[in-house]
Image (tube, rainbow, N blue to C red; front, side, top):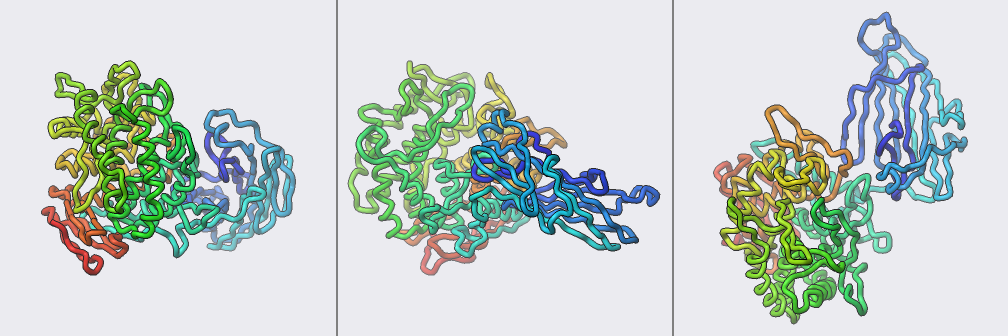
Length: 622
């Protein structure tokens, strides 16, 4: 850990340690491996030759295990035939910079250290941090940020030093996902392709590691958006991830909905009913968009679908008033218009926003009817008006058969670029009896969009590009301009499979699965959208969160799409629509949750599905 770039331990949006360099016997170990051993532990291995006459083989292995709770364990293993006494020096430093400064490259210089107990301490006007060591060092030099030990190594033996990084005033960290009360089921997968088991296992591990408790209501948990940049609550991301993780149970959805319900804006004004959220970059063609709009539209969708997966009636009733206010905001904001416009004056009419709004209206209406509330008819009527208008105004005919516009500018001109945001048109949402809600596109337009998403313009071979490769401004590293984003790829796979375009869905699924292998099955938020070639590997994005909530949950959605599980808990049924082409061969899932009970299902190499475990009384739908 050299202090360059993003390196460091972070806590509460601040870098509490930026430099931790080791020298053994006056020399830096030769690095031979660095890898993430789990979602909250990284392992680094280096070697040393203490006896040059012994030949090329190293006789000391230096192992560093770095944990997300701020602990680093440094262990020296000896392979020498004689006892050794080795001086070990650790040089530490920090700038106590905040994430914004680090991201923009404006972090200041390292701060001076002071000797503090069995380690060092740094202070600045915005906070303090310290590192303590066990065993205590024999020497501590504040001016150089240096701790020093003399470690005895018997032949074949080991000796360790443990460093603990702490931010003053912050309590000890405890991973929610390690507790017995975790809301996520410990599901497993198996099949012809061993990567299926690895991806599901690692995805669930990442979700567990990102769980956070609401400080005011510890029974409620949500997912941090991702490390290191977004370790807090990002409303839209938390809702998206909880929705994709519904096959692991409804507990995460319930906690996320309750937490966000407490943030809903009430009272008079045009924002009444909104779930607030920050603005987010939308790529080179559109201005930043309001994630609060997305979160407000996702709230009733997640509540409606969680109810289908088994969320209890009492929990649903408690959250229903919040969903009603979200839907009232939608109808009030649209008013006499056809489209839901950006909340900021002069903003565009975005394609994906209309998809979110249309899905919220239909699933929200279904929810209101089921719970005996009023307002469903008005939502369905608006959705019925929106569909033909959208097909006329947002579909651009061209020599290739047409494409959906990304948006319409305030003056009515279409913004014609093809990007991954179009996948939201395929994500229509789950209704009762295993049926999906109707979409904004007609059958012909859906087919054309499916072919575009499956073409080399959008399918990089590693997943779906954020922007088509032929579009001006395409940048394979652009996080909204060409990079592969796992969330959109998973939604594309699920949407294409549901619409019957299994060839395109299978290609994207296999691409992500092969990319995941490169990343140790721990999918990052995004990676470069370069075209896959023979013998190539996906290029990591230098600023991608990993682990991150939406790609981890997307791993669950990608795999469970193979079984096509569509529950209807209130009706006591579950419908299965497997991918008939079985692109990964036979695959089986155990320990999923439907209606709150374990659910196990297997899809054969012929695409035939068989339920092996389910709740008592749960009927298989037609």
